Image 1 (cartoon, one colour):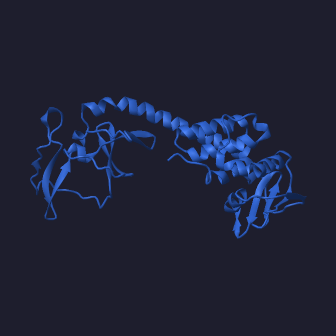
Image 2: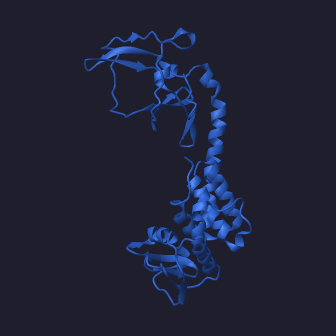
Image 3: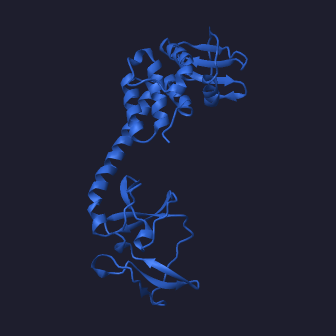
Length: 282
């Protein structure tokens, strides 16, 4: 079995599944097309993921009625990897899962298990950090979260987290500069973070200088609702962050109908809003 260099294994329910390229197994050149769907089969104690275009169904084959013919493609020990038989008038190759994995692939299993465990621990750590950022954010949590997102290939989220951290007065100094295409959003990000630190309740009106005013409602510093142009919520905040604004004023006023305990922190809200505009790795 040829192990895919692009993706040697995937993680399914916390366990690694080695990726087997069927075209290589039967002696054909591997296609360059990207396949993100897999059929998972059990090969002894190993789990193998076979890249496929689509699953068209599952059939039960009665081998007492059809005599399979061993294929000429063999693996370790000269055993065939499958048999040839007729299904619905067409020749088909029925693979033996136990023969898909050769000695080389088995030697990679321990490494795959260790890497899968590391990925699972990293994902659990990211989820824990994000939960902390959504409730009581800290500079350490944001910095660590950004680093883990970078390692996980989530460049947009990492860039957004670093951009917010660079604007946060309590964030000390972030590692690296803020992403270039978030620099013009820094003043509004800083203002919202300052209002969050002061736990202000009321409405922030942002002068959009011809692009329309934006309204941001805050409850004890946490963003409750955003309106700008014809958009609402996170989409409105993302749009508002991209507007060149020339002033703002805040009206302290009570808000009703919201429980601050159920509202995401402004830090997390800003990270989510900036994520869609942060640079991504090609």
